[in-house]
Length: 72
Image 1: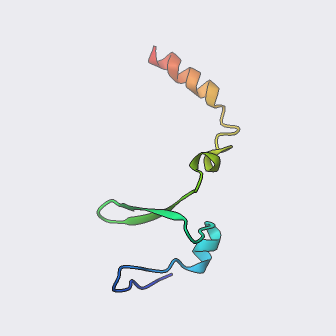
Image 2 (image 1 turned 180 degrees about the vertical axis):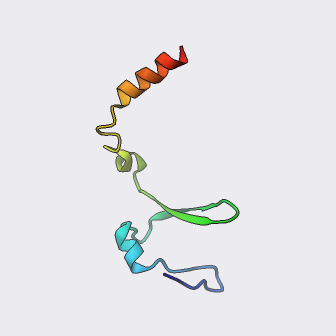
C-alpha cells in the first residue's frame, strides 16, 4: 500500500490498516526511526488495559523464580 504526503506533511492511513489495528480518529501513533526504517505504532488509549491477559499461560512466576535462582 502506498500513500502520498501533503505539503503540510500529512498522510492517510489506508482503511485496511485502520480496520486491522482499530485505529480511530483521535488515536495516537508513535513514529520510530532507526535511521533505515520508520515504524508507526498505534498507542492504545489505555495501555494497561491493552496489555491485560498477554502473559496468560506463560508461567511467569516460575520464570521469575528460576531467574532469581540463577542470579544467586
